[in-house]
Length: 104
Image (cartoon, rainbow, N blue to C red; front, side, top):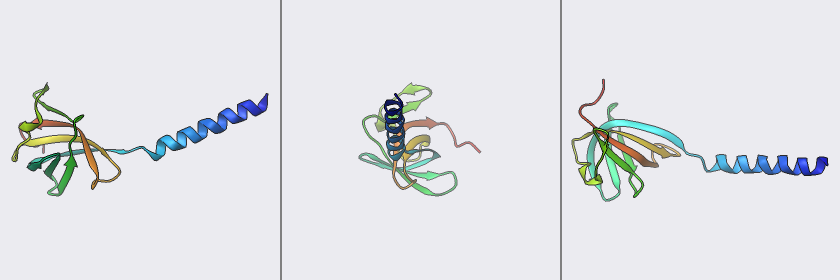
């Protein structure tokens, strides 16, 4: 009876370890769009750093809590980007919100 329980515990431990291997960190970038080229958004964060974020078909774009087309992401717009990635150098945008002004 203890052997099946032990096998179940080992299987659960392996499964949890595998899930963590594929986990990504969450990032929030607040800044201004510098450019949008194809599936990539270049931002200048409010700290003054340049950040590149990938866009895909799953990326949601909002303004005033309404979903809008990705074509509305134009240079000079202020945005809040929620993204996933292993590092800041490898980010995929989940959601981009156009805002009126950068928060202080």
